[in-house]
Length: 120
Image (cartoon, rainbow, N blue to C red; front, side, top):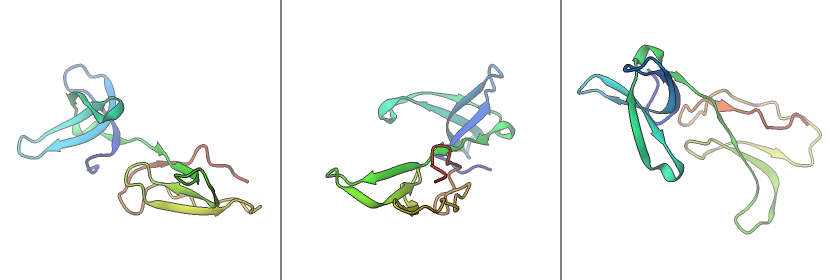
């Protein structure tokens, strides 16, 4: 079972179409939903989905290279898009490639996409 609050896909019970959003399970009713969200995390609608079809969706890690004041960090910080914990730090001037790229956040379990991270 995929934990709640993670980006997932699943097959809708009513139409059979695949939908993407945040997963939610109602254990009392034994029903599974994907919540579609818009900017600002406003609830737009929910779709009941077949729990057997729910799969995690990798979400791009957040790269931070400057602080809130616009000052450059000496290290690049890679954060989980879900819980915001720092997953990895890489020294900007290093010629070595970043080798440690886990598939899931060690803190919350979010599936991660490292696609835009340079291979230096």
